[in-house]
Structures are given as structure tokens and as C-alpha cells.
Image 1: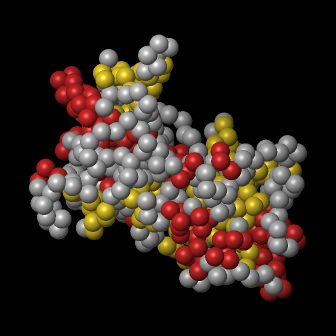
Image 2: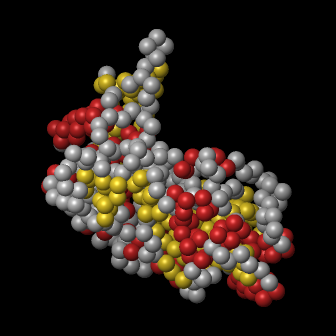
Image 3: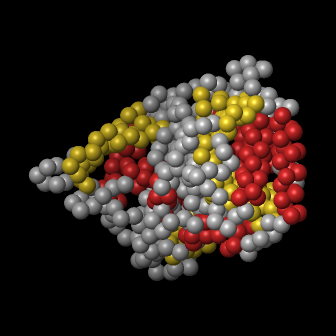
Length: 502
């Protein structure tokens, strides 16, 4: 093991520049797509004019998403509570996994998103995400392994318990999915930190599906999977001895390993110890975090990151900012010629532990995106492939084995542009547009790009143009079919947002 102390320091950005907890790093965008997965989830919405609130049996209001071609027609009704150009009535209720929830002006969850909730890809045998989850869990055999928490949480649980500022952009309805003002889909696994710490767990891993409104391309999907790892130590002599002994054990293991670590100081003026923390203890805990994650990086990437069999793994630590940790760090791995962001981490905010009623402890936490790492290890070029029900994809993987994905036939793409005027005084967020696309087309769209945004100097009307790239991984799309889908997109766009097509 070689440790290089880095001199340059990345100054952390202000709080309001961070979208959410542990960011999902960008991955290289490749051209590929996938069919929707199999599910029997029934997505139902009840509008204000329905007479019986307890009975929802109109078949037009249900969507049973099946594998393969049936996924071409997901439910087309959706709704948004965002402050954007919006027309039409808001459904009175939304049903999620058999339970009804009342909607309000904040509601923006869509049928396409609801249909994903029961799937839990990280628990499906032979799936790459399941294999990766099991690999990481095997690295922490004495940790509690958790994965059963509901994705429905309160905004307080998702943000306030973790010291998110009141003006943090992650709270916005353009960034997060809300069932109503009191309930949302978690945006990160950290939403359960207080709950797990409060239950008495001192060492744990939690894997879950998380939800964020996002653009459409090969590396972004509104549903993805995170793993949270955390450990706390008692703030007494026994706790300090425990962390010292663990640091010695981990350092000894790494010293015999083929790894180069580019490190930064455990604490610094720009990455400080929290008020009330013993600086000596905080530095030991930060060191324990780094040693633990260096060991994990070695397990995941040690044999595959380099160009040759004897090339050492290179890991780089960078100062970072998160609302709920200090000091905070990001971890990068040098993978086949370039640095890739892998995860975010840090010493847990004491306020979080105080809220969890374990104030006499200090600890660390990290969060990583399973898709991000699986795309690297399994050579999966497009994030939508994880949701594929195509046997040509699924049959390539076996539980417990890292297998290089072999692409099957790539079908031609078809580009369609849509240009429109937005009503005066209104706005249309790009995430609203992308959610509409997902609801109408399923996963048949490879990417969406805004190619024009124009404000007329005289009328003060805003015009936007989006380019939609249709491409199926399963089959060729006929021109007539794409034209039909595009017509439904345009129709929904007009009905949903009151735009005027140019």
C-alpha cells in the first residue's frame, strides 16, 4: 500500500448547491435501451368526479405492466403539483400498493413511477444489482443487513432529520416525488438513518430503491438503488479503544495490498470537526471510515480497474460537502484510464445521533449508487437495462458472479422534435417534460434534449423545442408506431400544460 497525502483541497460548495444526500455520479453515456420489467402492480387514480371513493374498478384507470412489448403503453394519465404550466383536474386519490393517499396541490408522483415501487431489483435473484448488494454485504459480515423499509417517508424524515437547509433544492417538487405535502418518496437511503440508529443498530448496511425526478439519458433514471453503510462508536475510553484497534486491523490488511491511496487530511479548516466533537476522536473516526472504504474499493475494483493484472488499484479522496456530515469526503477510483466518482461519505452530524437518542456516540456513514458501480463492473452501457425483462439481458447473469454484459442487436433510433409556446406567466421544468415522456412511452426513449429555448422580445412568450430519441432494445420501432407515440406525447403535452404547438 502506498499513501500519498494530497496537498490541493477542493473547497466545498455552499449547501444550496447540493441536490440531495449522496450524489449519484455521472457515468459515460452510451447508446442502449431496455424494455420495462414485469410487474403486477396496479396503478390507480381517483378523480374528484368519481362517486364512490372506495371502489376503483374502471379498467381504464389501471395499468398492468407486462414484460416486452406490452410495456410500450404505460398509463398515460399523470399529474403534477409543480408550479408550472398545468391544466386539468387533479385526481382526488392515488393508490400505491393497495393503499389510497389523498392528493393535494403538491402531488406530482406519476403512474410510471408508482409501477416501479414493488419491483425492488436489489432483491431479485441473479440480477446484477442483487449480486452487487450481496458482494458488499459479504465484506461487512458482522453488520446488520437491512432492505425492508418502505419508500414512502415524510419530508421531515427525508430532509429535516438530516439537517437539510429549508431552501435546499432537493426539497423542490421539480426534484422530488410527492404523494402529498406530508408524504413523499425517499430521495436517499439516509432518510432512515435516525430510525436505524434509534433502533439500537451500531453497524449496519441498508439497501433500498430511491426516487428523484431527473432527465432522460443513458446514465439517469428516476428510480435507482442506494446502499447506506454506517457505524457508530461510544464516546468513551472503550469506544476510542475500539476504533483504534479496528484502524490497526484495517491498516495492516491494506499495507499488504496492491493499492495506491491519494488521501487528504482527515480534518481541516475547510472540512472541520463538528462543534462538540473531541478532535482526536473525530479524526480517528474519519480514519476508520477511510480505511473501511479503501478496503471495500479493493474488494470491488482491485482485480478489474487496471489495464494489467499487476497494476495497483488507485483510490483518491476529495473533500466534499453534505448537509448531514462533517468532515465529508468523496471517493474516486482510477478505472481503466480515468477517475470515476464512486460514493460520498463523512462523519455523521451529531444532531442526527441526538435525534436518534444515541447522543453519546460518534460515527460515520457513506452512500453509494448500486447502478453506478454495476454499470462499471458488468459493462452495462445504459441504466435502463437494469429494468429490462428481456431474457437476452437477464439470462446473462448469475447470482454471485460478475459477468461482462454482451450487447445484443442494436436497433435503429428515430428522432422526433416537438416545439411549442408556453402560456404567458407559466413555466415548464425539464423534469416535468421528462416525466410526461416516461408515462407515455415507457422506456422506449433513449434520451431527451432541449435544443432551443427562446423568449420572444415583443410578445414575451417563451418557446421551447425538445428532441426525443426513440430507440427500443427489444425490436425495431416502425415509423407508424413512433408517429403514433409522438402524437400521444404532443396530445398529453397540450392537455397537461396548455402549450401551443408550433
